[in-house]
Length: 340
Image 1 (cartoon, rainbow, N blue to C red):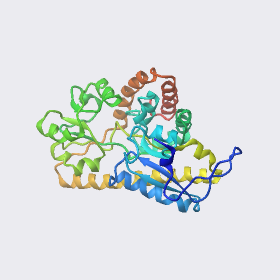
Image 2: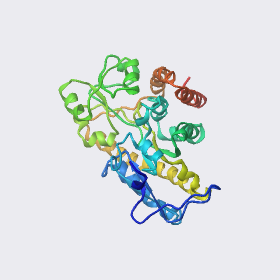
Image 3: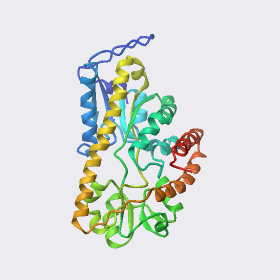
Image 4: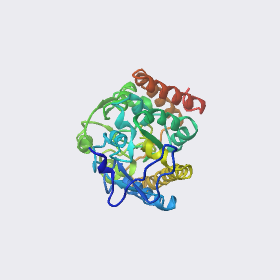
């Protein structure tokens, strides 16, 4: 991989002086997404990227590429550090193998019942600072967080709270999600997404951690699992927007502020757009009369969060950074009444 790859057609980067002068105007930065072209998330991300040239008054533009365009989904961090990419929009958990802290902050299973809780933690509870503590040593600067929102939960049987998870045969991916459900008494197995529908239909499993409500509905999951839980209570990924730190440091303060504000605006618009699709799918499901949408109480969500926290401690013990994430996260949850 060479630095020449990062030079776009007809666009070159001006040198940044030792004094840290502003980055040259009319510069295009190359970002890679962890989502494929045509995916609703990628389409929304593309809208954000297309807005940057106007927002910065023509100083910079962003070319957003779909997953694997330049490197694999879990190689973008190294590509940014090496200057092959200028930035990425990606699920932070892809780098948990490098440091378990990335996995814990990316998806502390059970922590969030609403995207706004995560956004408040990031902006006001120390999350943004944590991300830069983790990323700066690798040559990246965190700009901001977004998320597609809470994943729903599909089930063939009624699940009204934590006690109903006992002995539940369910699909969950390996790692923290599977560990938390096992600690809650369920019997999770690791199945690829392509096998979820068939496994539910044949009774191999009775429930699954899969995707957001509208995606589940579109793929017919509720036809075989008519007791979905919405809003979800377990999984919500943190999707980071990060940039090469040297590039960031070369931008003037005004442009940095514009980029940070643009990501916050984008995060809210993405959540709203996908939530609108979910709400429409929920309404259609309810009106159809064959699907029972279940919403767990705040008390049951808190019970699940307490169980999840016991597994966060396991992750915290695996690195100093993971312990730091655990300490800041748990303090935020306790101080906001989300965890005892």
